[in-house]
Structure formats: C-alpha cells, structure tokens
Image (tube, rainbow, N blue to C red; front, side, top):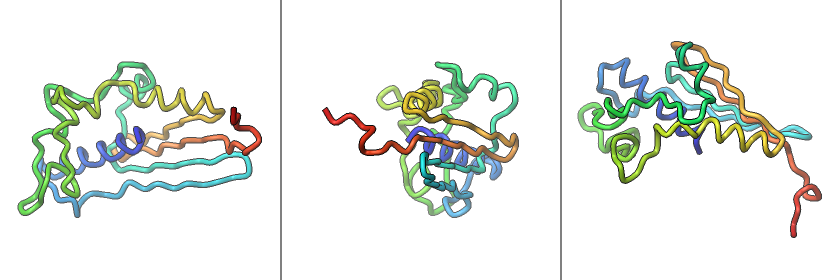
Length: 154
C-alpha cells in the first residue's frame, strides 16, 4: 500500500505542477505495476512518472521521520481539477485527509519507505529504488517465495 500511495501521490502532484495547478484525471500518466514470479522469489515493480527524487532528498529517504511532504503547502489539499471534474483527486478520490488534516494523515510521517524496506528484509527480501530525477521512480520489491512447508502453522 505504501509504495503505491507514494507513486500515485508523486504522479498527481507532478501532473498538477506541469499544468500550473489544474489537471484532469484523464491527463495523468499511469502508475505501472508488474509482478514477476520466479522459482524462489517474487518481484513487484512499480513505475511512476512523478518527477523523481532530487539528489539531496534521495540520500535521506531511508531515514525514519524524513518526509518530502510540505505540511504548510498542504500538498494535495486544495488542488483543483479541470472544469467538470468531480472530487479532490483523480477518479473523484478525496485527498483532504492526506495532509494538513489532523483527523487522518495518509502522507508525511516519514515512516513508510523505511518500514516497508524493514518488512521486506525481515522476510528475506529487499526494497530498492531506481530514481530518474525529473522523470520518475522505479521501485523494486523483492520477496522470497515462501514454500508451504517453510511457513509455521502453529
């Protein structure tokens, strides 16, 4: 969930920046997910066109508590779609709880990526990012293909 949320958030924000604050859900580039199963592992690749991560931030993304969300700016809150579009986000999704709303915070705590990588490594896998600054990010989530006999059923 965390990896998809990051990719979708970056894609929406980048599309809005490119169109000076107004965009349509029909103008959003896709977030592409590929799932590849090998004999001993499964790799999930998530590709976005969210602008990538600048060099200064890329060095910090694995630090607990580090976030790229600007709470003063409100990030996705208050962004508008093109005339005739419904909802606060693509497909009518409501991002009002994403940032700046103390009731429900979906982004900006700075624990998503480090915890996702920790969980992957705990189960014998890993989480890697390939960043193309100015374009987007490819995320590779590698997980061991646990066999039935390897899973404890007690």
